[in-house]
Length: 112
Image (cartoon, rainbow, N blue to C red; front, top):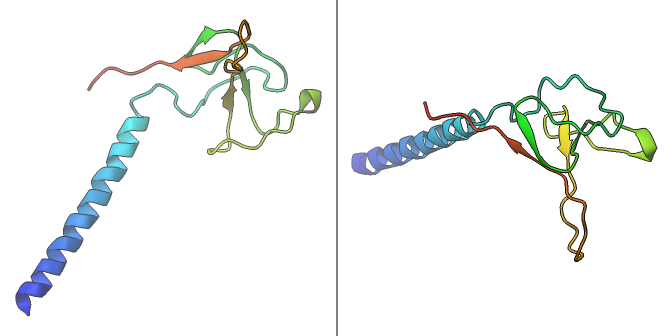
């Protein structure tokens, strides 16, 4: 009986350790990018601003920074998962010769 209890306690400890390590890995992954949450943008989010947040680089076209308050031209956006700004870009629509693509890239941080 004692062996069974020890085994269950060991299993629970192992499972909780995995959850802790998994949570820390997720946090570490988020910290691997500069400004993954788009903080610090001070431009106008209620227009086509052709801009990206600090820590991001435009790679093609003219992406825009918007948020849930952006409402020009009849837009009605939902809040991002953090409630803040988000990057709006248009991907290739699949039509041959379609010229319009907007994209941006996060600046990755070096290994620590």
